[in-house]
Amino acid sequence: MNPMVWMLLITTISTSTIITMFSYHWLLAWLGLELNTLGILPMIMKPNHPRATEATTKYFMIQALSAATILFASTMNSWFTGHWDISNMNSPVPMALITAALILKLGVAPAHLWYIEVIQGTQMTTALVLTTWQKIAPLTLMYMLQSHLPTNMMLLLGLTSTTMGAWIGLNQTQIRKIMASSSIAHMGWMLVAISLQKSLATMTFITYFLLTAALFTTLITTTTKTLKDLSTAWSTTPPLLTQMLLALMSLGGLPPLTGFMPKLLIIKELTMTGLTPFGTVLALSSLLSLFFYLRLAHLAALSMPPSTTNTEQKWRFKLNHQMITTPILMFSTMMLPLTPLIYLTT
Image (cartoon, rainbow, N blue to C red; front, side, top):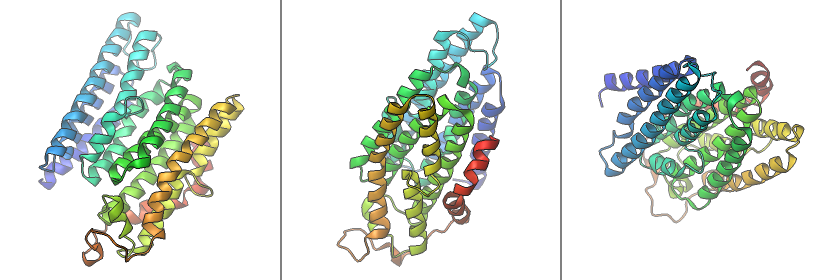
């Protein structure tokens, strides 16, 4: 694909996300979501492969359905209230429809089955965009609607998504499916954080964004797509795989790494609001996610080659080092001291 076309697509995706983030009018928000979808579709269909075409079709249908639902619900709310303001959502039916549409757009359980197949049908770079940048616009709308969201429903959806994402990732051998399951589980934590406190949700998403980007850039550098590939990746670049080990443990929420702080603060807020049993179940559900993170970490850094494998010995080939890999890994592993600053200033 022509570099100018890539720049145009990236500009479209970035601009549409910014339009959605800073708009207070439902029509502008809907326009931003539609431009965002149209900008990412050529990136998904770039490989000339039937699986990429299938992933593009699924993504377009899901995103078009959710955007149409948002437009219908906002029109209904304007009919009831006489306003197109996003913060003026006092009607229960439009609010329920918009919540369902955003849940579908984010790929949160129980509307998560399309998400895993779309991530598996894309390239690693596109999967990185889908699991990080494409979450910003829907989460921004949830952030703006926080005072109108049904708290009990959000908590239930968060627990369901955390459990289902962890459960799905247990028996996967494809790295992209494992990362999609991880994204579903972390979106559950995001829903719980949004229902509790805005600053906590912001810190949780920043941490998730950096850790997921760090892990994906490592996988892109080592051209790892399956667990078998991961088992022979240590000889390519041991320092990079060591950083990947830390990023995996951080995504699992192990102390004293970066990913531990958001989960600790979410459980603390749940305990302070009298939801200790719910927080206990939420913490136990993250143990399932921790299992497949540990499995990835064991294959990446704790099992030394040579091992009996049918895959190519990738250390014979030149690595595709990206300039952004080093700063992302540095921020993802050293951000723990900065979490109080992010938590108190957002």
